[in-house]
Image (tube, one colour):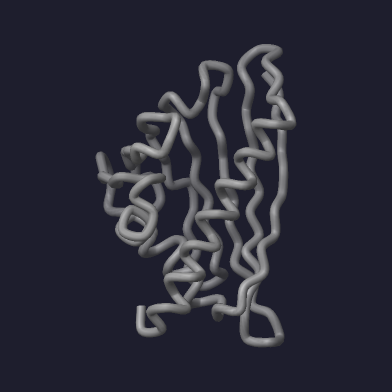
Length: 158
């Protein structure tokens, strides 16, 4: 089993605390609302939303995948960090044990923020993940982040 890690940093003019609230705390309801083609709904199977919570994420019609189980590994509202893992579902493509995401929203001097996201793909056996799949993952993360950012600009009281 191996691990493939990639990092992405996305700047935003949205204040860090507001972006964290949208990307982490409100994501289960916000993303299906603004991107129903990507995520149809999120259902808590176990837990209260905090560490240890297991969620079932059902993808929308625009996705090639049906659903995944998502485990909340860590959440720190003070330091604006969140870690979670995809532990089951067709998005693991049969060759992955899990995908872990570490998200940190960092305030910038201009009042905006930078969303730092580290993705760790744990492969089964000697399975290799192509550069194309990694690029696809980065593009989806960027699109989701930009959609949330646009929503926050359009709805300043959100």
